[in-house]
Length: 79
Image (cartoon, rainbow, N blue to C red):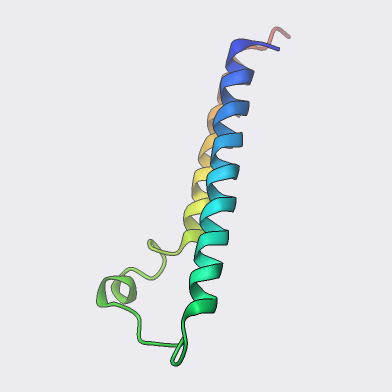
């Protein structure tokens, strides 16, 4: 395994662990909230609904990394 692959693997693993811990923390926080869960969104989030959406950000980051990897492999692969 090359050093590049190992670095990408460790970065991906770190992101997955952080996401899992963050999701569990937010889930426990939501369970502790009583009353009105469907409160009004802040103005900044309403103005930038697509930019501040974590799902769209995740897809954008994923496709960006995928594009960089495709370009890297296309330039370094010996045909």
